[in-house]
Length: 128
Image 1: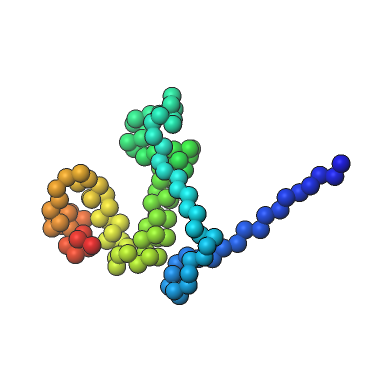
Image 2 (image 1 turned 180 degrees about the vertical axis):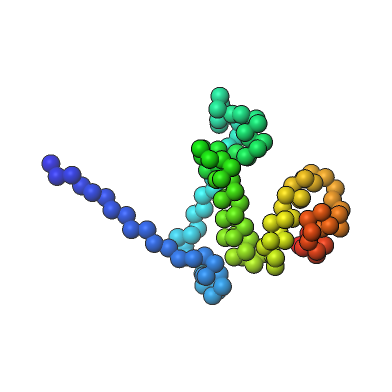
């Protein structure tokens, strides 16, 4: 019996380029899938609170043998591809300095001027 082979050809277009030109984002983009961070129950006996606090629970980082490098690469990719490419901030280096300072104040009432001073960025950057 002859073995059948299944071949896929994957192609796509840049959503950013399509948005800039005002083109409809195509029906093929209607389905969206998201990979959320793990929850402790999913990891069962593999869950390690110290590791979760240090590196988070993103599957790509959690499963990596080089968690520190993977997390740094993920953060750089996020900053470059999502923040800078979408022009969500004017100064990427300033935004990168702002992130760890903002994380320290998570869940607290914040003083925009204090965070701006601690991060070494303009108050308008923090407000934005």
